[in-house]
Amino acid sequence: MIVDHLPILPVVLPLLAAPFCIILKNRILCWGLVSIVSLSCLLISLFIITSLVPGNPLIYSIGGWESPVGISYFIDHLNGVLLFFVCMLTSFLILFFSFSLDWDISKKNQYFFYTAFLLCFAGLVGV
Image (tube, rainbow, N blue to C red; front, side):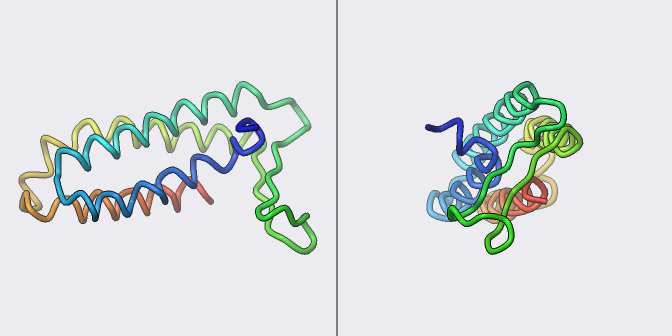
């Protein structure tokens, strides 16, 4: 089910959306894609926080390998709150990018910024 893969979705969604910003090469479409990804990660993180049980963290084993051999992704209450705050700040920041980004980056190169932003967002959420 999709609920089993819910802990890893806030990391995977920005990583999957970043190449589409390079392919689209349109600043308005890239802004829309980044805003959809950040808002969906915000909703997913809110659902993760509400589904956490005290003393029982969410554990996602990447590739199906268990912890001693493979990579495990843990989300406890502290990580869930940090995940929510990062997603919330990203969702608020993306609303102001359309206004302030024109001053710093030319309009034809803004899709590079959105690609780098999604990759940095995936890195922050994955930690």
